[in-house]
Image 1: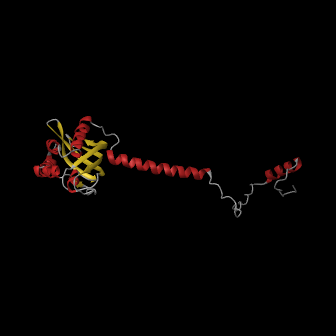
Image 2: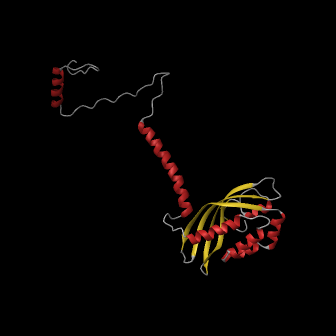
Length: 234
């Protein structure tokens, strides 16, 4: 290496190393090295490999997206992560949903009578109108049947005001009648309000968020009910 000139790849001898060290001490501040020119890829050569940092950023973004989806679903379903899941509220709700989404031409009368007995408030008035003898006879004549299984059920709130509660449920439903050629399936998401009557939890209102209702089984409609519609009635 010549004085003041650094030869790339050369091995400095001892005297040059000492002299370079002394020179660096005499300088008031080290000079900034010029920026490196961007690396150019040879035509036809392999593409530059992504850095480890780039992989890390992609992984974090993907994880945040998945976590956001899960958090949104949980928050929508329960509203409060600390809400107590009252077994009595869950039991009454599950009984209602089982009778509401499961019937055959032979059991429609008894199932709808059970639903009417579980109703109170505004839902009691609607149930008496919707589950009347004419509707039951029409379902029997149409050989209408429905099967539903509760995929998800959670208490959203309880005790505000006292003696009331609300639930959120997701039901997988299949239904058929003599006006359709094949069994139809749907996923029903709904909320329901409950009220204690003489110590017994009863259903005071039902709102379908999306999906079909047992009413569609009698008409042969394969589409979903209107979002936000109250049940009974679309």
